[in-house]
Image: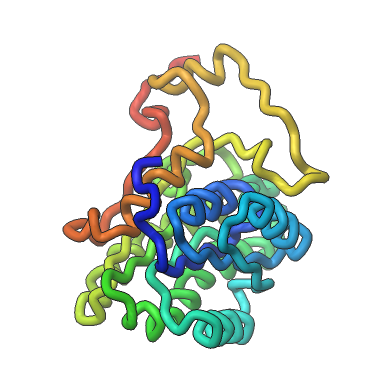
Length: 261
């Protein structure tokens, strides 16, 4: 880890931190000394994540929250305020991860609405209600977890792609809008990140990647949550104090490689 102990005494909130990339970031921030709050709508995943990190003597708490629901987000921030009184970094990671839906002519519109509610409305609500806590920090930061699917698509992924495209725009809009509040806002757009070993127990699996899978990436492998976590540690720190309104693609080079099949 490149920033060991940097986050000592700092408070970091990670939505969707119960599994996958969110859990990877929660562990990294906690190992760097932060007091980490995991917020997740999946209570099973959240409790497992809490136990997993507590076993490593890390400072972590879990608060159930569906980020699409304004009252739950308000309650989340009230609990954070009561317990810590400040927030150094907010990582908007919670999202409906499965990008595939039925073809357009068959897709119920409520599927589209739910994905945008969690993936786009959620980060806006969390940023809004976290702002008073962020303003109390010396170097406050918001980090949005977007996706390379904001820039490229497979068939029938329009709710997810639209939500992540919106999150990219929300990132630079918030960055410009929150300058007076001293809050930097950036995004990470992950590519193929293998989360099999970071899932909750009953969904966990051992990853197996073919030669073709690996060769899609110029770096020669599929990504891991640790790859995202290392960048998150940097972007949420004052070491990145001259970076705001930006999106960092972390995909092993996959989106810049021309693939003919």
